Image (tube, rainbow over all chains, first blue to last red; front, side, top):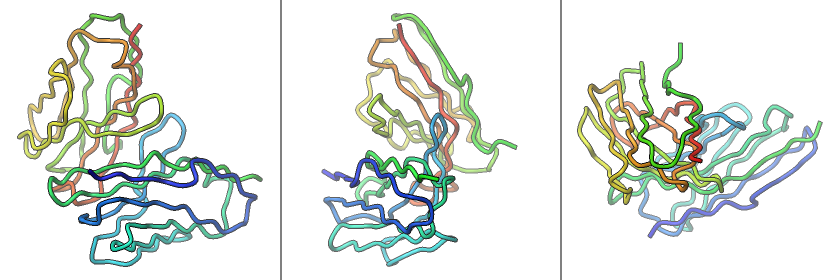
Length: 112
Length: 113
C-alpha cells in the first residue's frame, strides 16, 4: 500500500529565507510525483510535476527533486515571500493502477 | 475563463436528502476526476472518467454515483446524505491520463446537518 508522508505538518519562517519541504513515499513503483499548492478555501494548483525518470524540475523560485529509490522528494523555495503562504501537497502516481496518492500537506506561513 | 468549474460552491442540506454537484472543464481534456477532502484536509480520489468511461472507482458507498454526459462534464450525485459525507469535493481534469498534470476546480463545500 502506498503511503505518502509530508514533514513538517506546519512551518513558519521569516520572509526572505530559503526553505525545504519534505515528502516521502513507501512504494517506489511510481510514474510521477507532483507538488501542488492549496490556498485556504480554494482548489489545488499544480506547481511541478516530475516524471519517474527525472531527478528534478524547476519553475521560478521553486525546485523539486525526486529520489525514487529512497522514496523521497523535496520542494525547495528560494527567497520566500508572504504570498508563498499556503498548504503544499505532494502526490505520487502509482504504477499499478494509475491512482494518485496525496500526502496530508505542509501548511507554510511566511512571516512578513 | 474558468478552466474547471464546479457548482454549487457551497451546499448545506439535511441528512437523508439527495443532492448533485456539477463539474465542467473547458480545457478539452479527456480525463476527469472527483476527489474528497475531509475535515483533516486529507485528499482522496473517488472516481475518474476517461472519455465518459469509468476508469477508477474507489471504495466509495454506492450512494455516490458519478455521471459523465460528455467528456467535458462529470457530475456527482449523492443519495441519502449522511453526516460523514460533509467534506469538500474537488473536481479535476487532465489532458489524457492521470499520469499528467491535473487541473483542479475550486471545490464544493458540502455540509450535512
